[in-house]
Length: 412
Image 1 (cartoon, rainbow, N blue to C red):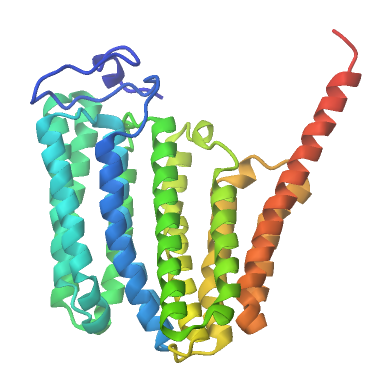
Image 2 (tube, rainbow, N blue to C red; image 1 turned 120 degrees about the vertical axis):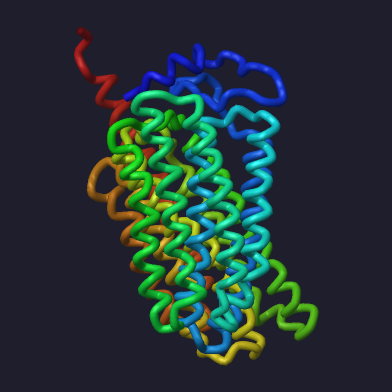
């Protein structure tokens, strides 16, 4: 499905008009060689600052034995980060014209996420979401301004879509104010209501006309953010191991955690990127489910790093939790990552029952590794690596069978 704005934006791959200010018109959905821009990569890196802050606070709460409250706060803060990132990503895929005003508004959104990041500690420790709310509102008002700018150059159904986006974003900001004015017990319920409202905005806005997002570009953007989050996971775990060895001389105690953590992260990368997903994103229904589901992929990938930090702190006696609970801080987000990747990615490309069962079965085994206590992280890493090996072996066997079948088939 291609809206009429595709023709207005020129032929696929055609150069964009020059000048400091340009009309914000839709790009072609079949534009050739569409890749992420330097501004988008800078945007991702700045957003990961907020992800890292949320991870740090999650470590503190889980290590102190307050896992329930820490996970709830993490889920709330991570939603604000992820939702602002996702909205910008899909808008940029459809409308990025890289002029001066577009760059400035994008930089304003980056400033907003840095404000949000600064408020993460207070949100976790004192349930004070004011600074988080201010940062979120800055990002969302900037996004609404982009949609209004796009509406100025649009017409017909496309204009209706852009105005629906702008109106929906602005209305939701009013509801979010409740996070700082309502009593604390009511805030999680308000959060749930507002999450549903935010998720409904794109569904309502694109009910009659789809924006011109580019499937290959969207797949690349999500893949790059996954890489950056996994990189942050490795960085956080490395700092924790370095601190444990430097301050406590606990190389033996944390070696199994370091090896297991690396195997988990390496396997997570391999599993996510083993198949190209852009050809699957050919309809709004598939794209919405895939895009929304990445909340769990991004959140669990970042939580793996936090869990590795918790496991290291427990190994050196700094965490007030059991070895089983510390292992669970790693194994549970790892299992969630594997299951979500299977649901969103892998199951569409697996052939046969054996291939389909690899990732769900691995997730179950990873959860079972929790009960191995101090050896749980290493065992989970070995299981994850075995899943990669099994998947590759099954894929190779299926391909060999296909080649043999082609070789024995009678010529036409």
